[in-house]
Image 1: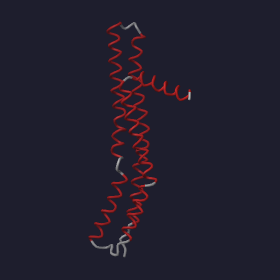
Image 2: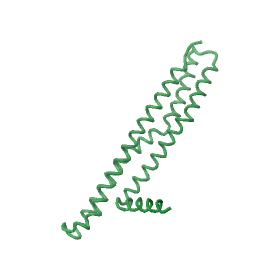
Image 3: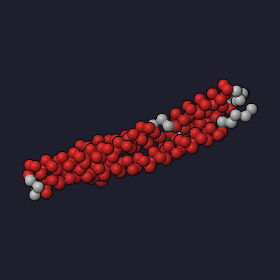
Image 4: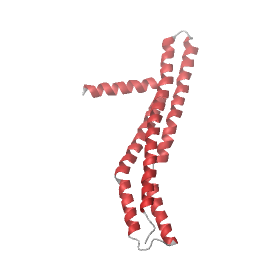
Length: 175
């Protein structure tokens, strides 16, 4: 139990060092990771079921060569593609937002440093230290969040594209 309390206190102290912008970055990263985990779980369960249902709906058709059949095939593929790519643009937006929020944290931290310099003079390093941490910690957090998100959003995008490509190949036009 003490380990959890110590971990909570360390996280709280870290968030206080980074200032209010770090809390926003932490919230954005949390939402981004929830959406990434949802997509990973969906790819393992829901997307496979949608692809099976799409294949079964196509195989149940008696006729597959007419213009109407081509349109039905395109609609089936489009529905599966929309389901596969559902949250990916929002995740990409959150990934792009992380370094921008880190930059905002840098600017607000530097404003704090300049304010401390104006009030107490350039020789008081202790009063400037809080502003320097408020400038560097959000930058680091924004970059870490963006890097982890870029890696996983690339995996999600490629997985969705590959699985939809397999579905397109399986929905043959013969009969």
